[in-house]
Image 1 (cartoon, helix red, strand yellow):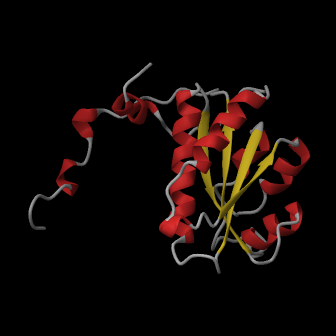
Image 2 (spheres, helix red, strand yellow):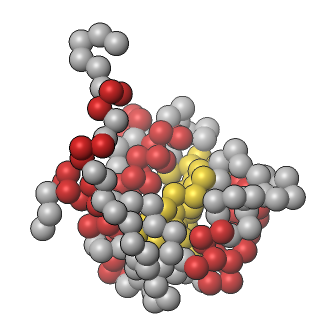
Length: 175
């Protein structure tokens, strides 16, 4: 078992995956990590849609002009959406769940990448959110935040070099 800082150092956005499914047990652990995520006032406005169907993932790959094409080769997509009427922190709550899921995926030996859906458009200038909502029959009151692509890593990404981190972004006491 690695320490948490090492996990963070090695977790990178992965856009190429092996052509093999993610085991159900690993998907369940990723979803458990999401369900344990903190949320404003513990309202838990988020909901998750697990997509393993290659045809559906291929259709979702066209939801944005740039940045969603990796879903075409992903064995697993998890859509994160939220009831935006339930909480005023829904966007933050969803971002936290996404990070928990990506960290759990990494700990399980999987790669992942965030695909922004909220406030993005397709090549035809169609809302990515509307496209994903219609494709997956997501209720109208749910805002679609992102899709996480998850799978077995099929590319080499170097870990972060701790010597090259932007330490100038850190301030103590005052800005």
